[in-house]
Length: 133
Image (cartoon, rainbow, N blue to C red; front, side, top):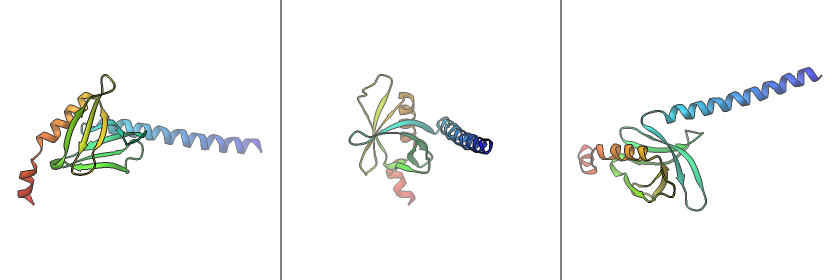
């Protein structure tokens, strides 16, 4: 009786380990995409959450670090306002993002902060997007 139980236990452990490895590999692969960056979303109160910021031609999305389908915050490129705040840690940048909704704070690498600002400034202005509607 010990043999089948041992095999079943080993199979369950192997499935759990392989699933965890797949999640880690997926997160690392997504973070290496040029239009994605890892960040820490600072919420009001004690809550901090690791997220991945993904931007495309028209939108910035902050998604969950592990469950990528769960969107934590998003904004249209034309309405996005980025303000840099003083950082608590050296080598990190704190950004306040707003788009007419409640602002959020994210802690990112300074290079990612520069790339995000360049992306938002390179897009069409809100005035020109009015004429496209």
